[in-house]
Amino acid sequence: MRWCSCQSCCPRSPYFKALLLIDLDNFKTLNETLGHTAGDRLLQQMAVRLTAGAAPDAMVARFGGDEFAILLERIPDEREQACAHAKHEAERISHLLDQPVQLDGESLQLGASIGITVFSDDARDAGELLRRADMAMYRAKAAGRGTVRFFDPSLQAAATARLALESDLRAGLRDHAFFLHYQPQVERDGRIAGVEALVRWRHPRRGMVSPAEFIPLAEEIGLALPLGHWVLDCACRQLAAWSRQAETRHLELAVNVSARQLHHPAFVAQVLGCLASSGADPRKLKLEITEGTLLDDVEDAIEKINALKAHGLTFAIDDFGTGYSSLAYLSRLPLDMLKIDRSFVLDLTTNPNDAVIARTIIALGANLGLKVLAEGVETAAQRDFLFENGCQAYQGYLCARPLAPHALARLLGAT
Image (tube, rainbow, N blue to C red; front, side, top):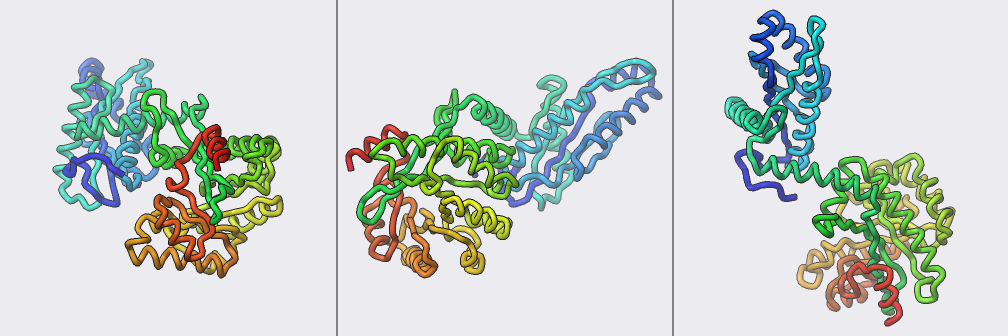
């Protein structure tokens, strides 16, 4: 994930921390007006409020005068996420300090300007970090009291853009800005036997947003469950509609399921509810789950897969070979299909290692009685290699990009 080119401010590292330097905006005026004794009591109240309101694992300190600092240690390990998290926490603290304070029967309001520096876990120069946070804090005061600023302006802009995208993602789900496209899955005889449902988002200003950008974001901010449920419900309704048309009634429909969905206590009931309300045939619905999702709780996954298979659903492991595969769990799971990840397909005709991996997955699937489908097939040479080595189906640009329902119907009518 790309973030910024400012290596001095936000170096490339797997671990990040953030230092927030806080200056109370109106303290000097109030201190001079009310007197130093009242000012000290005011600082004590602000210290109590900060200590109680900061994140549980944060370290809070007073630096003298009306300046406080908060060290955030357990923040996300992606640069973009770390900066967004730090900005969100700073804005929360700013709102907390902006609330009125009661002192000797009077209601007083201070507010705060907050500077942020995000740094790698191995940073050693505390003085330099404080200097950066101090510079960011003065940038915040110059921008207007009650504001938050990063040491580096590019971080400020990028973190603001990310938080705006979070808000837009929530609004998009509420305002029905998402829709599904369907990528054909092709059998050895050239017949399109199924499709995979892929969610798309049309942003009101940015246009189409890449799923690689918004799906991980949905996971991070707790929208994986509602978005996943919407995708499943929409896919089931499309499956039911296809069953009433001669050219599409044979199609199987594959839907990706996230770890949060699979391990949610109501997952089985939600899937069955979508099928019942849409009237879709459960035997035409395939749920695709990644290896990492299964390994989160194998016993829970087995129980839920079995419960849904009893109703006719089928299951596939998506992106097989990219996770921490274990033959022990693979032999126990009641699966129907393995999907070879596109990363092994791209160079399989030129890279001997990828060719070996593809052959191994195909042989593994055959020995376990599982169908094998390859993703990301773009050339006839790739397709021919896969079919010659026993792969039963493929999907990819060689056949078609993900299509809207009407375009898929046209393709099926032409084949």
